[in-house]
Image (cartoon, rainbow, N blue to C red; front, side):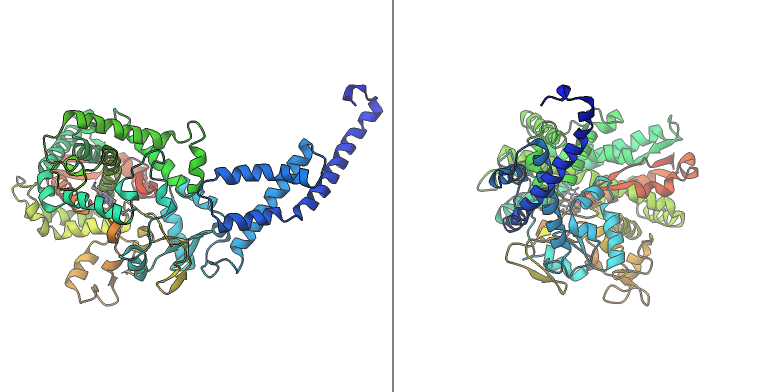
Length: 580
Ligand code: HEM
């Protein structure tokens, strides 16, 4: 009956009728839930874990309707909505109860209930850029093994490093699959496994050999000289106002340098004093979105169906392809990283494809730029926060490079003991890849890790930030910047111990990771950091900018370092420079 044909007194009955209908629908639906369909779904998806959410979402959408038909419940919008709600609520409850139950294979590992129940908590933490700090706090509370997700464990134990990351350890899993473009047949070195990884790594190793590093020194020296020139222009002794965001300038330097290495130049951030190509924004947006979705890899295929949802990732890949096309058109004039990645010397049986070189070229920018620049920024931050150490390290650089002329002579790097210790201490307290990616225990291969059984299919993290600050491996004062601990350990008793009770366990120091997938650019990074840091200290007096230190921003700067897989600097690091 149409509503307008009811008498006014009759309309009062409508709410009651709706309520009655709802109650009776609810009772009908409750009967449906006794069909155990939600639990069957749980069992099915538990056994045959889907790689994409597309099919399960479709199945979840259709099943309530099928149930209504199967149980001959009158079909209406209300019955469908109620059935769907009860269905999904029962399914979620079933999953949640199982995950916190003693029957879950990870029940023996402690952790907060919310982390055990859902990975969405991890997504929330990743969105805030605080994964490294949250994981460390969890380890402080629960010990060396923490369940950080329904099927995820974080381990802060030195014995786990070899088992998980070393030879015969666990492979990279679904977390890394997100970092490969599903629309392309090629992958970058970072996401390759087994033989394919070993083959590509051989090419990269050639590009990072001592001979190749010597070839790159001219490019490196030119960019460092350009940075010093630009900083001088901005310094109090130059024409500038005095205060400089040194973190931004390190970033311009590292992008320009890696751009030279991988694509024969073209970024020119140092020249422009900014990011004219919007490269930062592209990398930042791409890196953030990849970082967040890699916690819920099953959502990726669905995101690719939503227009605009993967724009960050796609822009980053498009940018890499454009750089590569430019580079192919201009050809090689120097033996840079591109020269090796394309195997121009034709040393390989099979030449890498253009797609592979593009993927690795983009990887070199992402892996080699922010990592080094954030390490240098943290180094300056720690040094300026510890003036006595600054004085000592400056004296060391002055002694090693007395004339200030031979600053780019890398053969003297071995004499920079305190500077090396300061950089080690920086990488310990502020590792540029603070959580690293997890490895995945293969099906049927559950194993003991540092004495604790880790079942098949678990994602297992060994987070450098938490490991490096663990008192079991770095003691005393694991959170304090104390570069001398490295010097004491080097000169101390065997076993890496300095003074009595002091612990420095080099095996627990993994800023460049460990094993076959460790950082291939490690030697290059060290060369960059030592060359740039010594040139900076020899050329300028550096101190926190007045306003910056007074406003307390200096103290909070380290808190604004965000974990986006590689650290992202969230606030300017304002310093004043004076030519010495
Ligand atoms: C202080 C600077 C750096 C740090 C702390 C660092 C750290 C790391 C870490 C922790 C990994 C392992 C990531 C994983 O397991 O998922 C890695 C891998 C990698 N890094 Fe670095 N990195 C630095 C500089 C560089 C530079 C300058 C390059 C030059 C291109 C580079 C290229 C790479 C590549 C290509 C990989 C992948 C290696 C593989 O999967 O076989 N890194 N890096």
